[in-house]
Structure formats: C-alpha cells, structure tokens
Length: 161
Image (cartoon, rainbow, N blue to C red):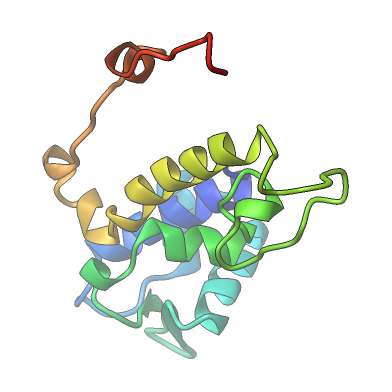
C-alpha cells in the first residue's frame, strides 16, 4: 500500500504534468485543485525538488514545475523518493536490500519467491507508468488476473513436493 504522502505526491505531479511547459505553478493552485493540505504539499514538493524531479522559482510568477519531461519520470521513481522501498519485504528489495532478521536461509525461504513475484508485478506497473500517462488515461493498459489462474496453467505434482 502506498502512503497518503505518496498519493498526494502523485496527484501534485499530475497537476504539474497538465501544466508542463506553461511555467511555474503555485502551491496554492495545486493544493486547491487536488484538495491537499498546503503545508503537507510544501514538504512533498520540496522533497521532489531535492531529488531532481521538480524545480522551483521564487518571487513573482514563481512556483514549482517539472525539471524533466513527464514522459521520463515513472511512478517507481516517485514512490522511492517518497516512500522508500517498493518491495514488500526487505530481502527482495533491489535498492534497499536488508536480510530478514527472522529468516535462517533465503534460499529455502518459502515466502521469498512469492514476495519476489509481488515486487516484480508492482514494479512492472510502476516502471511503465510515466507522468505522461495521466494525460492519456486511455493508454494505461490494465489487465486483471484471477487469483489462482496462474496455478491452473501449471499443474503441481503434490506427490513429489
């Protein structure tokens, strides 16, 4: 689950994507348009600026704007800045790996392969969804898979397990 902070960051970036190329956008405009508390939004935008996703301009006509083309910023980048690891457990994280303290052996761990699949599925969506996708919502491909459908395709021999 993503945090409320990450959700607000994505909503703010949606607005900045809509305004891309038009100049800086006021925090108060983003706050009002997306119903985000202004003080909370200020902290979020500052964090995104400090990580190179946004730039800010002070003074009259100032505000925030995207530093790079919205087609080059994906949700995985944003979520890592705001929430940190995307992986559901630290032992399967690409960027924030930590061995689980309650696991004796990662090779024989029954949970790890499942968490790797969860990580890969999430990353597949996050890395392939750019800020530009918000302008073209019809282009976002969604695919629902019934729980257990994958298992139906590959029968398991329970006698050998």
